[in-house]
Length: 177
Length: 308
Image (tube, rainbow over the protein chains, first blue to last red):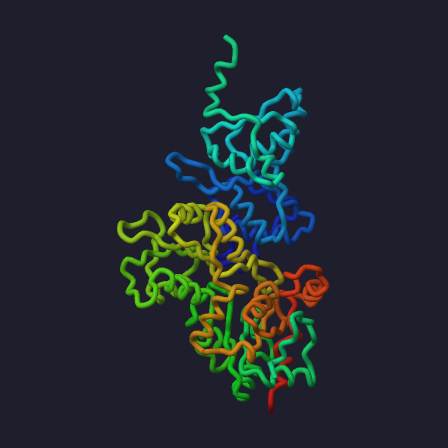
């Protein structure tokens, strides 16, 4: 709906949909202060309104080392304004693994999680009892893993994969003709 | 005798009667937050203009320190006048917009710089904030393609009701340079609207920029002490004879504590007395710093503490 006027004081007068029961924050390249305002209004107006985020990724990498902001930034903006924590559906939360496991016969002990990100892919794999395999074609460099391995902090050890490859193409020789 | 500053732990005492005169008598000056203290929206807090007038007549200084980064101090001077406050000049008003500009001038120009080669500032904020940055002798990055020439040396996050994903992405581009500063005008997560609703504050936008860039912002506003440094530099205030009056425990009262000022919470704004009492009852040392020395229902209650 069109905003009734140019300023936040006007936007705060726009009618709210009384059927709203959740605010869902996903990747939104059209994110704006006005939308953040509306999200905050729903969260404050309806006490049992859920706040859900699809994921917490900080950045989506592009070629050449550049990156665009990830959904995690938008989630953080809403959480800060509302002073409450979102339920995050995506990795490392095990919710998505549970979705997969409930539709397919997945035995964690015989399943490998392959990913490029330690704090999402590998952590979810570890939490769900999967074998974890890091590929180096994405955001993570090996020295980051070494840092976690050398750390005294047990939480950081959950970020260490069981195995790594330079690229998933390296798995081909292991698969028979 | 110090102006009412207690021992290491503040005790949130109601200020009234003889206590009022004991606390206000020795004070040389008061620092006031604005929103929720002097006014709420377009309405002055009843009795607030009279309090300022009585302070003036008692020979006590009144200075203003606000985290609101929307307005220039010139606009704030007009606002004071429009809402019925007499004699408040721009030089008495320290907004986070002004102080962020002063901070950036210090960091980018140093002392005696003339602007060339200092680099530009990418500002996420409205015209009030942008004007303060320009008035400090700094140049702003345009929105869109950067022009050839001076690199962007700082990203300044303020209250920006035109904030977009595109601006967030642009800010992150500049912040890839580790020499580029990330500065935020204030940490406020939200601000009250006159009908009891809330609007997101600079803190929520800063959280987005920090998350995307992997950097921590330097926050100019309360509870950090930079704005007090600006006040001391201009007016030479003695903290032991100065009272901080505010409505938000996490910014105003903590600011007072951090600057060595005795603090008075007024209940016409954001924080409730129950919240102050909860902090007082808390085990954590950090919570104790959020407890005001005193509280009043409204700053009009301070009037009887001043000489007739």
